[in-house]
Length: 249
Ligand SMILES: Cc1cc2nc3c(=O)[nH]c(=O)nc-3n(C[C@H](O)[C@H](O)[C@H](O)COP(=O)(O)O)c2cc1C
Image (cartoon, rainbow, N blue to C red; front, side, top):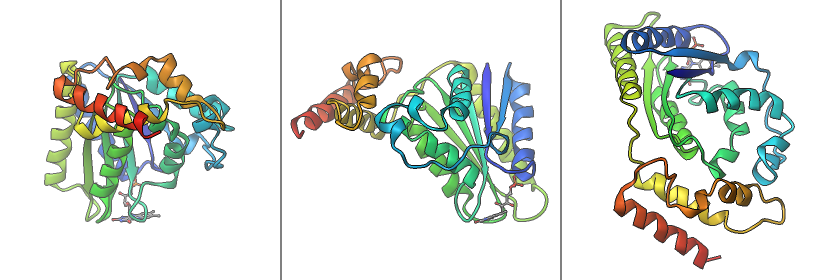
């Protein structure tokens, strides 16, 4: 099992320590290899807002070499751990710069078989909101399952309660990976999939990256990725939303 770790902290501090406890516990519960990417070493510039990734394709991003180095590793991994300390009630700038460069995945979701664990740390506040923000982003990118581990230090050391939560979350995540079972997506995920599917139905004069992606992958034929079982009801809801999108064009 390959697990990519994307580190959003500019230093090896609290978030690093929590992650190491998670890694130890995961190793105890399964056969897992970690591939670490510390964003602070990647030199990702701010997104310049050119829209190239969205309109023309991610390979037209001026920073494509830096980003594709990360996405290639993500595509090869079974799982992802993504970490960030809370900075001013948000993710770090380092992580936000990465997320912005991945924005095309909102239009062209793809990571349908991947599972993720989100780790956030704070001194006191914002850990849950920030973990939920990252979780939401990953769901939009197509992730099958995302668990969160928000930790508030509220002191210099991890307390017993936090230690217990860390071990439990790591064990549960590893057990879920070991199960090799994919989760059914939420109605919201199915709805979003079909909204983007509907929007990619026509070429756009500014670029046809979405249209090409949905056609070339043949995802435009389905109410969700055929790799994931969604059940009859969500199948119907997905196709209905797609039809409505087409009708209102
Ligand atoms: C620039 C900056 C902004 C921060 N903003 C918050 C915040 O909004 N809420 C909070 O509880 N802690 C905040 N903190 C504290 C960190 O989130 C907390 O110490 C975290 O565990 C640090 O993780 P690290 O050791 O991995 O860098 C901030 C720290 C820094 C450096």
